[in-house]
Structure formats: structure tokens, C-alpha cells
Image (tube, rainbow, N blue to C red; front, top):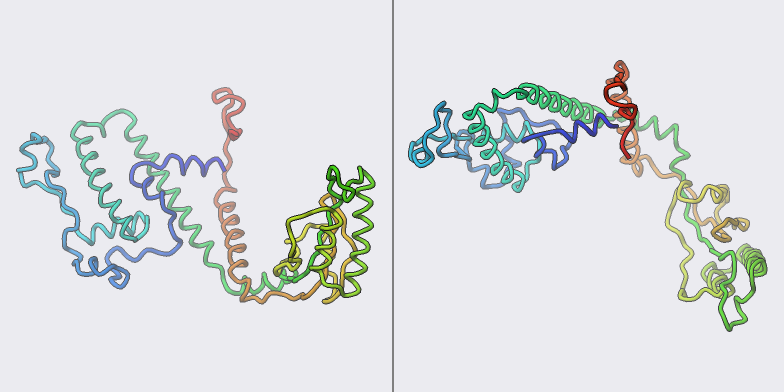
Length: 336
């Protein structure tokens, strides 16, 4: 949706940087707690009150000292491990070493540039408060979206079981063998085989499909029959075709092939013809996948449904009107 695009696009400063890595929907530990079991050995050896970043020359003085004197002034800003990890927990960019190094490089630069900007009075310029308030709106929107995503991810087990019971047919699966017969012979110059023009070329393969179906129903090997189909059609390059298909569900087949699911194990389908060719199926196995096999899939489906409902609950009470006399007639239309 367009409103979400603008929220994502306009995140600025440090918040924008943290969005380069997706947040995982797991609660952050309290700011005053540090799980040392998750830290690399070098991190666990550093106490919470020990500095991990020191910015020399940066202090909260109103009158900036000359650049040459500032480095010698003893003025510095210290960030302890506890403070740095509070920042990590708040921004949620990730807890890996590479991300920490990126933040350790970026954060001091933000502090220094913000400090110099304040000294130059940029925070007093017209429009600054509007920008600050807009950034606040973006952060609040991001936090709400994160919270909703976390809540949507908490799918109760009874909902998963209920979905499985009500939609068992979705998880019906089959293993089949399939013969693919081209819908016409290939035309080869200077060759009698496959040289039939137009309708005659199609008729040859239609008749061949019916013959192959009869032989398949009589129990002949599908690999041999597939090779026969290719030979008659003049298709080369596959001397050992494998007609066996992996376990698949109904949606894994074209809609007009779904009748394969009505077969019993060992049965052979009639010839199924469409614009892509002729097909003959043999059902080897049919069953229903267990709840444990599809639990993750169901959870993902329900998570998406819950997220959609939660977002609708947030947005439904509100509506927006745009003054087209100001914005123009196409103001409400999304760009291509």
C-alpha cells in the first residue's frame, strides 16, 4: 500500500540505517539485562560499565573550541557496553559482530555531526521541528508495525489444528508417473518421419496418444512408453526419460489435470489433452500429509491472515480525502 511505501521510504538517520536488516519478531531483552550466553567470548569479558566507544574531543560545550585545541582538551564522550547494548536493543538491527561494528562506526559520526549541527544552530532553523515531528511519526509507525507483526506471529496451536481439520483436502498429495506426448510431430526437412503437414501432424500424435494409453493400462513400463512417444514425434536428446514425478498436491497440476486425484493407486488416466500436448497419468500413491508435515506452512498462512486482519482493524476506522483542486486529479493514484 502506498502509505506503507512512504513510511519505509522516508525513514531517516539512524532508524533508516537499521532497516537495512529485517527485524526478527522476537522480544528484545530488558535494557538492564545482558544475556552473556549469547555474546562472543570477547564481549562477555567486558563489564557493563566499561567503555566500548570513546569519542575524544566531543563534549557538550556551547562554544566550540578550535579544532587543534579540542583533541587536547580532554573533553570526550564515553559509551559503555550497557549503553551501547541499550541502543542495539532499541534499534533491533541484529546482534551479530558485523552489525555491531557498523553501528559502532555510524553512531559516533551521528553524534559528532548532530553536535556540530546544534552548534551551528541548525536545530533552530525553520522547518526543523516539523522534520523532527515527522521522524517521530515514522518511528511510531515502525514500532506499531513491528508490534503487530510480533502479535500476528503468535499463532495459537488450536488455530493451527482447526485449520488443518477444516482444510484437509489442501494437503492431499499423490505420486504419479506421466507420459508427455507432443501434440504434433516435428517437421524435419528431408525426412519422412515427422514430415506430415498441419492437421495430419496433429492427428498422428492424437492417435499415438490413444495407443500409448492402451498399452499403459495394460501395464507396460512408462519409461519405455515415454521414449516411444518421443520417437514417434521426432523428439531427440532424451534417451532415458524419467516419467516419475515427486509427491505433489492438487495445485501442483494444471486445473484440467486435477482429475488425476480421483484415480485409485495403479489406475491409468484417460488421455488428457490441452494446448501443450497429450498427457497420460498413472497413480502410484495417494495420501494426506500429516499435521506435523504441514505445521510450518499452516502457521505461515495463519500469520499472514492475522496480520491482514490486524492491519485492517487499525486502518478501517479512518479514511482520507484529498483535495484534488490542490494536488491534481491523479493525486490518489499509485504511480506505475
